[in-house]
Length: 128
Image (tube, rainbow, N blue to C red; front, side, top):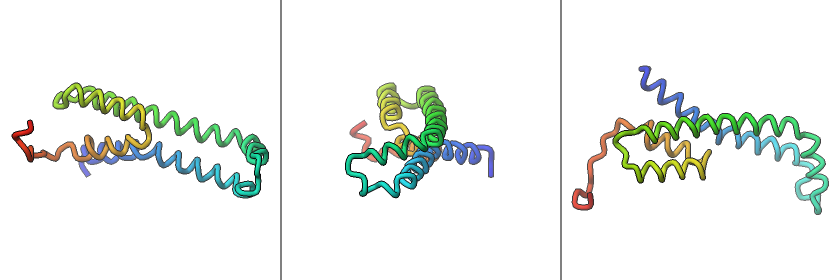
């Protein structure tokens, strides 16, 4: 593996890590609530189970937030420093990364980091 492919792989891990960690957090939360889902009508048992397991839930979500914030800052700076991308496209990507966060990171990675070396021919030159 070359240095470039290692960087692409590591950035792919960074792009998918927040989504993966949030999925693990959600699975953990549903495992905690497995006995009260469907049986608790007013939500008091679910609230009690959540309070009992507050510390691990908070720590996992905090780790996820930190990794997602690092990924957001990296991808934001990566997009904003690209010279071949028009300013309007940069603004749209920044908004997309900020709003859709953990779902946007893998999309950005696939479109601008993994396939960055792919030269795309303009299929319709009359539209450009």
